[in-house]
Length: 237
Ligand SMILES: [Zn+2]
Image (cartoon, rainbow, N blue to C red):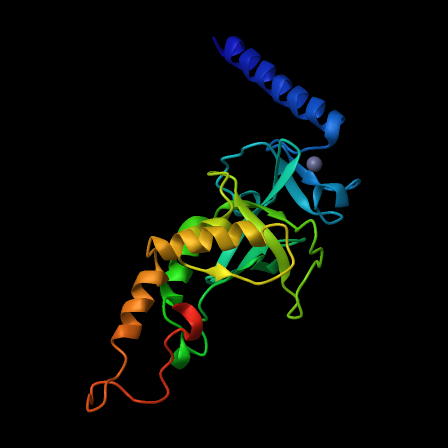
């Protein structure tokens, strides 16, 4: 009995050793299917020595959860934080480093300064959180507007969620949480159309902020300040 147990243990050890060794001999991946990038990193939108995984992985360890994933040749990065309706941070680089991403082609209501927060800014932030927080996302540049970053050093990207295969830039316009940013991009015409549809359907800000406009102070109405309030400037036609 004892011998049988020992024999089984040896067989299992040998099997584990062999399976780790055979994976290692192929691509030097660890047992989770992850490794550091050593060559052709740029092609996969990875940095040199950036730890990343191949395929879908459900390991609880933090460094694997936040690692980029390569699926069908595309690199998906983990969203770390949503800052407002059109800005988020992703894990990008070695050792949990983060980069800010500005969603291309859209403009969500401003959240800051807080006392001048624009109508629907909180809802826009909440919506982007719902769509993208803690998700793995594909980051893509525009084919015409090829700037890597804006003047604030934020990556300019379209953000597509791995789980849903939906581009959040487009979703936020469609649901009335953002407007089209007037710029020379491949998407601007389509985004304008989506924005007009959202207006017609009174989606999101196109309903809420129109109501707010209607409740603008009337002469003799002391409930609202007569000056200093912003009602989303040119939100309403
Ligand atoms: Zn790899």
